[in-house]
Image (cartoon, rainbow, N blue to C red; front, side, top):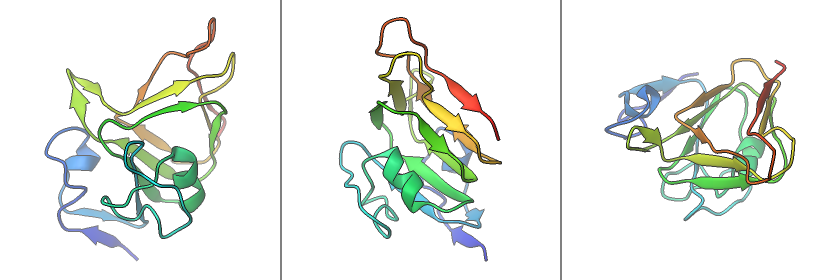
Length: 144
């Protein structure tokens, strides 16, 4: 069954997924904002006005074919690799100076930031920052 958001995600600039209207998709849209979000089990995060705080909680709550939307300015430092084993689309809202305003930083030496093992995973308009640890690099491993 298709879900229709008549106003799309509601952005006027940025990634096409964020600006298209209407948005027709088969899953749920999950909202994440590090500044105002609160993690909790579903139905938390199903509203832009009541977002989740972290990627990990959004991935836990989401099912395959869902969209996880990070509000403009979301920043998150990961201390463990985030495994994406479901078919998910992760999209960041906003841009500044031509760069995404959604940033993920890896704070672990010589380890992955994201491990993608699911089919049809998309990372859209997300800035993957250089690692905070010395001699480590921000890495995305794709095995799916």
